[in-house]
Image (cartoon, rainbow, N blue to C red):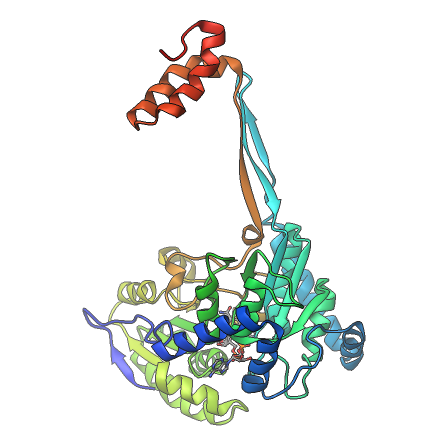
Length: 429
Ligand SMILES: NC(=O)c1ccc[n+]([C@@H]2O[C@H](COP(=O)([O-])OP(=O)(O)OC[C@H]3O[C@@H](n4cnc5c(N)ncnc54)[C@H](O)[C@@H]3O)[C@@H](O)[C@H]2O)c1
Ligand SMILES: N[C@H](CO)Cc1c[nH]c[nH+]1
């Protein structure tokens, strides 16, 4: 990994652009085909990209049972314990409808309603993600969503991984289809003969999934663009190079387009991490992916002062940020843009990927500037409630009608005055 010095004007912005023109075109074509040909297109693209024919798209009850039976009791317990932590964290986020009244008897408020149908994307191209099943489905359950539809690409055996299906069972997801990529997003957005369309699509995925979500946005809601994973580590001389390196590689192994960045005030840490990366990456089973990610998107940036390091992180707006420094809490207070912030040596990023409870579906590619982690609010919508009392109405009718006339909207004014005329004789002229 190359070591750079922080300097005025250095750009730390993520260098992976939001898809190439070719990728965007490929995704548009896939979506068009699925809208036109439904299930047939899902089969064609699954054969092309996943190299397998899934047969029935819907996962059967037998497949669910076989999946649970394929895991050890210990594995099932781990998924269950993670699910408990994730459920607890998200249940704290549940909001209720609220109403307020004043002394005229007017009532105002917000009525919260869970979405009727939500599609959750669980990635599955190069790895299986039972943790993403829990992270997507449990907040939807907490919000009260009735229909949760899960999609994920089948493996080479034409099936979903047992751990993914076991996690779905633990999370209470029953409608699951073996289809992934842009074709799955199109099916969720527009429906096919087998898959009924949903109202919102959530969940992470690779660049094709992220581009497809962006493409269908407007016809359905989406949560955010949660694309290839990212980690930034803000460290000083107190950090241990081997640990920092391992954490950088934990995200690099996700995807050749994943991004790992060390921002440090310590030149010696930077040098140690640079040589440690070379050693550790060679020993990883997913060496090819991690090495390509580090080569193309890995960076080590040395800053003269902690204030510069904080500035660099805020510019990067990373999906994950680890702070491994003295006075880490004080530094955390200065961070404005990051999807999830892991504080201290024992908050290694995978603690959050699997177990702690906060959601691992997080904004990437700088979108942490304006997006939040997936949460219960993503699965509820609000209706405003307005119940004006007669007293409040009569007190304000003239002002409301006058406001309408400022906009030149006479019918609005007359709607108000149609009530006033009966009681007070102040109707339209
Ligand atoms: N941000 C988050 O919260 C988060 C969480 C977990 C995983 N991730 C990311 O999810 C991604 C998982 O990626 P993955 O590839 O393993 O699984 P995936 O399920 O996202 O993508 C696999 C699908 O991509 C499609 N595809 C592959 N090559 C294609 C091509 N040339 N043209 C069109 N479509 C193509 C195929 O349909 C395939 O089924 C990684 O980028 C990982 O970093 C992000
Ligand atoms: N790091 C991913 C979010 O970018 C989430 C994940 C799932 N499994 C392992 N990691």
